[in-house]
Length: 401
Image 1: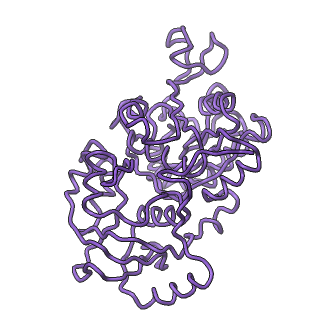
Image 2: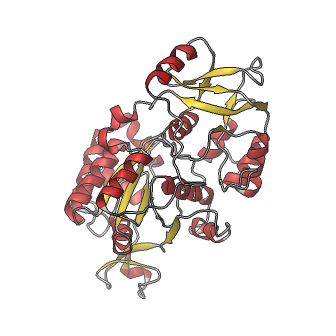
């Protein structure tokens, strides 16, 4: 019998989504409530709480917990949590005790209700400095925080929507209950999660195959929420990963699935959040490579490795699988890492993002030392489809990490 790691902070998942008659009743009530418009990031957090991905949270954080998470990466109760989960508004009329409807700002759909337990202001620059290590507006995570409303609203929530993720992504979208059931049925006890917001190239394949050797299986877990301009869309990414799995992995060793959060690009702290909610999905390990969840040069290449060494031993049950920089080495005759390859830089294929984008934009073949041909073909079709007037901007912004 498969015994998986427990959910974070307890022994049971805590999904906040209503069902059946309770859902129908709450939806009708929500139509009459004062509305709070939610950003894409907040919507993702709500959906994640709805499916139990943020177990054991029961809603958005109050001022004490916001401060504690920023300062110590723990809630006031001592529960480990690396990034504040908050909701904001500019509405001056909302007060403590009010019940409000939370609305998806992109679709205008009511997705949750909340009883406001506290309304408070924060120092946004302080949050940016503690979580992102910068206040520069060139950082997409800083932009998210600075765009928040004047006030934060705390309170428990009832989730009324799945955000249309199941309809849009089909079987690719799986809840923690579903992935846990999948692992149980497979008899897997140890599962490594591979976090990705991009298609997988040869180095990613190498890391995943090492994890397959160590664990019973690997869950390739893709971002289905909001990304920054230039990141590869989820459907293209999923297709590229599918052809890789089909052609280069043993059957029944890989699960490809997706989750509803937006990327925060918080580097080391986001690596910890990725580990936390993968534990809720049933994973025992998280693959952590170079510059995990980073953007540009805001974090050192292995800051996300080091942060796992400074948290308390009992902060998480899930463990990090730390991997060095990987690349193709001509003399080694395959993918190697800085820890295993003794050869010089002249023997290594280290394509830059600029070079990769240039090759794809010119409809040329990516070298097989960088990408499997089946994956490259999927990417070439996508890049060829980008409208000419958008191509330069998208290519310049795209990250290949």
